[in-house]
Image (cartoon, rainbow, N blue to C red):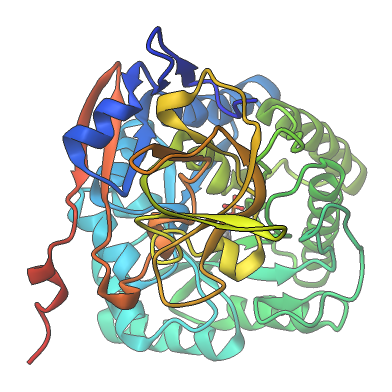
Length: 432
Ligand SMILES: *Cc1c(COP(=O)(O)O)cnc(C)c1O
């Protein structure tokens, strides 16, 4: 029933993560608490990197999409593992640089980067601007000129493949706020414009086709479509673009229903398709970037809560309320995301009670999961929600002025705080 390698049950019947008893973690650090398995994060990084070595002659780099979970410590870990880092705002960029992340391995995304953000990125001399639209291209060129620098730019293309759901569709993706459309000729126009700007060096093309994708075929198809574009550009301009960024979106387990492919398999299939297509189109084999976020950190994290009020509504349902909710995990209220929950101090008991797990915020929709099976709940139990390592802390808010929980990382069985719990003083810090 458990969805991650690092989770086990000890002799007390308690859930453990990376060898640490979660009930003891809850006591030691308080709840709600995010706990992440650092060994698992590192091994995920290595699995992606080694798949490039194995299948693509090492001609690629994994770039961690930090919007999934960003703080100084994860930037340090990602740096130590030799990956690149995606940022999508000045704040994520600032965090990375403050953590000592090398600027040349930073990729800056976003469909509406502000001038202030672009100036900051130029000042740091980041390695890759992923430009989204013509206005931005013009702004990057102008600000680079002002700074006396050249910006390395990759253009975000809408390849006409949408894989946001369990299946994917090949056309009709013009309606997205991100990137240049391929089928209207907008992409080709933008590439030609980028080649003209004096302070822009066009390095690559980028696409990102969705998230929580379980199939390999949309990635293969996206790679082929993008290589065709590189070939078209070469024919029309004589310039051969050397970098191809295929985005992220690899799926993970949230429940036992989810069946992601081993990460290795994506690169194996994509690599084979790229080699073949390059031969067919007489192109040099491009340097490839991929940008996994969720699949690096998602399954490595859990959230621990304490159960408070239990409300049994006869013939309707039982609400089990925890001391967190939408403020620390907004994914259920946003997209009815599925999660696996269990009572950490009764992990060896049968999950025989159907409950709806509610948060403590003033919203009826503030739920973690509806009609889910957990062990018989009692006030004071520790509830664990699994696979919360991605898009939980990074999406957390202070709604109802709830302080954000601490983040604890466990490495080789030893826990340490990497983000302190917010205090009430933190909440009023900027109030005048
Ligand atoms: C969100 C995002 C990613 C990461 O997606 P995951 O589903 O977390 O792997 C990668 N690239 C871009 C451009 C994104 O917007």
